[in-house]
Length: 75
Image (tube, rainbow, N blue to C red; front, side, top):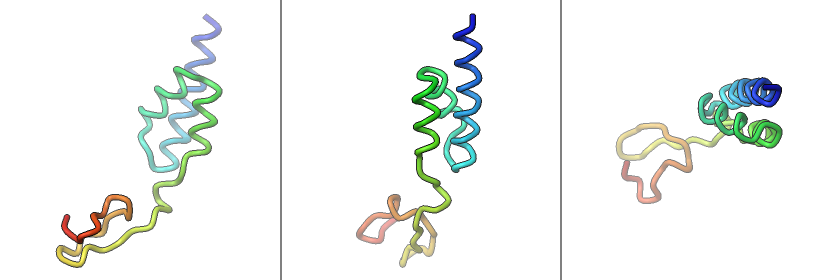
């Protein structure tokens, strides 16, 4: 019973940290709940999605994250 309480606390905190960094709450909730201490540490070490470089597509004008943009310029 104590493990379940600890796992839920870590899951909620990992989900909140993941959400604050621009990622999915439920993804980090599950990771931090399954592996409590290391899941939260991974959420803390995860990059901020809001700080990812962005680029405007030369053909359509849509702004996408650099790792989502194709090299040939097509969306």
